[in-house]
Image 1 (cartoon, rainbow, N blue to C red):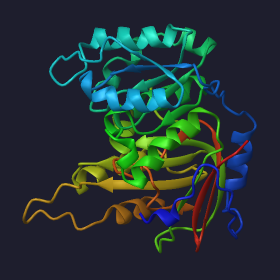
Image 2: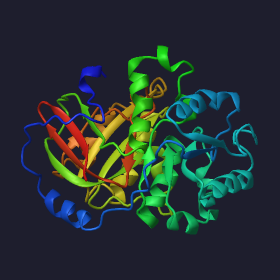
Image 3: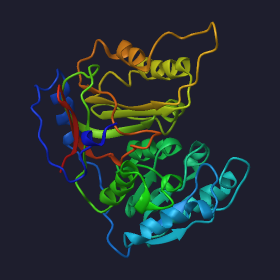
Length: 344
């Protein structure tokens, strides 16, 4: 995405927007009646804990993130799973659970940065005790496999979380990093310190115009589909849903979108945001699927009227900006582009 289409967290541009789509106002009103709980924002001297509830990561691989977050004025506490390995995981299930649990229960930890994604959160989420976390909420940070924690926490506790890059995406040398990478990393700092977040996406002929207001929720499509009919199932009614994924076959994406459709998760949205669907695996010769991601999505929502935005800067890509899940947002889609604004 061209950087001129990205509006930083402090930008306040306005767009001329068409009227709310049918049903969107009622959905927004019902959601707005009960704002979620937003954990305390961080200030210099606060401590961020780092844990690896999914894939493994070495101590060396988190050092760039540690240096950058310390430069923001935060203290860093590395959990026991950093440097641990049990095959693909950052330690055994019990080691990963204990490490995350200790950070959830530690009142001196003000935010928890997940070191990387991969796979593993679904194996431990049902054994976590969130009682202390409910009393003293803190920011849970990450994306990809961490989508499981976002959906679980939003569904049960209504506590905001942060969908963003993790330790393995911080550049070794921030000063020489690509400006897009710098901006995505800085968006984490801005979100954690209470900036009112606002992002834009460029015009796209596939967009559907309109305005939506609702709690923002979503993440990795594969993870959302994997927790369907479980205790971590996503709640989409009246919400602005964002989706992204990477490394899947087209038919697999169609199957997962079909699950959302058949389970009526797409029916009562306030709005829909489509981020990056990258590194799509090639079809086998002679087994071409013949549909794009856009085709799959529009086939499922053609009878619905809420606004839809494509090419939003979120996903397994360089322009993956920090989004506050569980917080009220306003999505405005019009012919000049789309604007997502955190509401206060």
